[in-house]
Image (cartoon, rainbow, N blue to C red; front, side):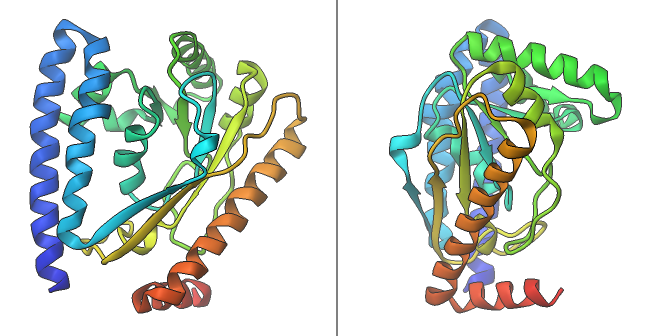
Length: 253
């Protein structure tokens, strides 16, 4: 049943997403602003409702820490799932993503019209300047920013270096940063066809205020995210045998 549910979900989800990219691109030609409610209040919630096919539910914790403007969200990145569902709760949010994604037919076009911030990682300092300019524009237009500080997806129980791009934005935009912890990788794993039944938890943690120095900010951000993710992982391991197995394997690697 796991394989059947996963196949049905993947087929329905990606077909629905592709159709949305077509409509989103057409809407974007005439009005980029109109693409925001189209995606965040209509199409993405519809796509995520398909998760019930494979038995995945989503619980949002820390809703009191969600602000709809003037903030950066720094989220753990374990799965494609959070890239699709977070904007359903942060309803005008833009993601910072690698420029290569904008070259993907349909998907990339939709990202462009929506207003995502694409970064060319090979451009070094020039990329940071463009990142800051684009981020200032989105904040000015009351669009919060979502960034994955590790810059890539990691397996549950694992972490990589937190990149300096987030610190750069924190120091220059002068807005608070909300850490976001999650356990999505236990149910929708990186580079995996399978979708495991269970409860995904996404938790918005108390915001980190402005004014901290670089080292203090980064240590606080990383400790909050990683400690809460560890708690969520252990919570899932208590209820789902597959989650326990995935975490045990990660600890051995």
